[in-house]
Image (cartoon, rainbow, N blue to C red):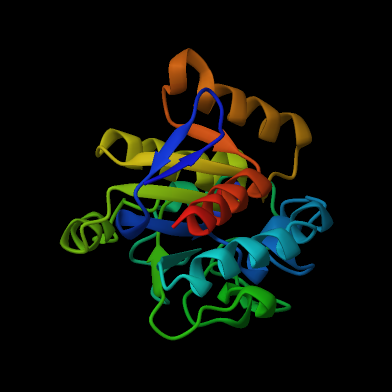
Length: 226
Ligand code: C5J
């Protein structure tokens, strides 16, 4: 068991029963020409966390731990995309329509792939999710249960939408969740800050939060003393 300095209090992490979940680090949200940009957002804010997410991935990969990547992705026939989701917002190009990186948020398109620097490696789970949360219509809960995973460490984008929704879904299913604060980002600074406050408020009503340095220090401290 690792003890990680975190908000609102230390997070106890059972190494073998913990998975890293990297939410939606896909070109559609992070590169110009994707869904995030079509909604008028400054995608450079999200691209800035790629090196930190890379270091977090390395922490888990070097120890042979479970790594899960999600993508917000719809079937090419859009049968898993409610019309209300397509209609929402004032995007220049809508979900399912052709953009510079292919059809927005559609499986298999160039824009739907995880950014090259964080690309999944063999053995890592890649979950295509039609919703904002990672549990809706994905079967991931059953896979996690079969693998004996009880603790989830979260990173990715955006903090207040897909990351927060996934953490809340996980929390309701009994997982102990930790958010790595410098490995997540929002298009809106105050939404990131507010989300972290909401997650950790009231004694950790959704979970815990900590920077990558504290998580890395906990791994190293345990290994030095072993
Ligand atoms: C959004 C996400 N923001 N991955 N998706 O639509 O947070």
